[in-house]
Length: 296
Ligand SMILES: NC(=O)c1ccc[n+]([C@@H]2O[C@H](COP(=O)([O-])OP(=O)(O)OC[C@H]3O[C@@H](n4cnc5c(N)ncnc54)[C@H](OP(=O)(O)O)[C@@H]3O)[C@@H](O)[C@H]2O)c1
Image (tube, rainbow, N blue to C red):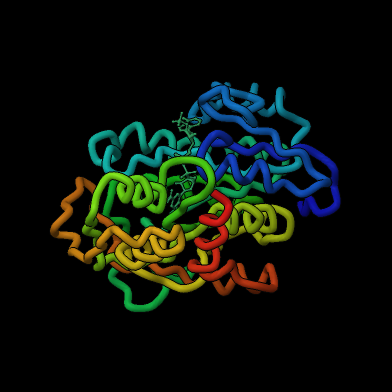
């Protein structure tokens, strides 16, 4: 099952997305990452494949192969929209994981599936471990949990779920990017200070996904940058690191920014299992944020 040392192709789904695009770039030298996504964009070798459909996934595997593994980054990620559109979110986040896992099982391919902290309710005072009870409080969280379960049930010997959170990176829309854009337009920003998590750079997460594919065991891993903060603290750090000093940032509560989907208030993940596998944790969120901002 281990693909260490083999030369071959690894299918990366969601290759035009924030995380998938970085996973393509982080491929080890001895493997070729082939990207698939709904859109035809640079890095996407196989555009337009609908991952919820068993037949199109079979065609995709034949066209992209021979494969030695799959890293599944495609998802329905519009968290608020999912409250109204749970059926579509379920097809993409749930059904597609089962379809991919069955395709991987047929060819005995290791599968890495990207999961989320939204499977937890966020009421724990301690960082969540992989085997802590799940209790999603949003449609997005429920559909992502179905995806985890479908994959682990369909291909228990080959599926690895890597749950992460608060992503940002060189591509795609994300919180630090939004703060920098707003800081160009406004003198003052109010940011939620009562939700705590670990901002995680795709520059840090992408290589970790490859390590889990190459040497991880089937099962669940948690993967986020070290340390934790509120969205408010993340906004302050982002502006500070970008050298923006003339915008006032003040804290507010979740109640001041009602959203369709509830967010887990405290969803820090215990990532010691991944750190043991790799011999080190992901970088601290501040260090990773500084690297990202310096590279913009
Ligand atoms: N962003 C976060 O903070 C965060 C936190 C925790 C976990 N995650 C997980 O991390 C993974 C990557 O997230 P991301 O932020 O990189 O997402 P993203 O930027 O939204 O990328 C997801 C990609 O999946 C594609 N996609 C959607 N439906 C599809 C379908 N039916 N068939 C094939 N492709 C489809 C999307 O294409 P279109 O754009 O054309 O729809 C998009 O390019 C996801 O599993 C997500 O749940 C993200």
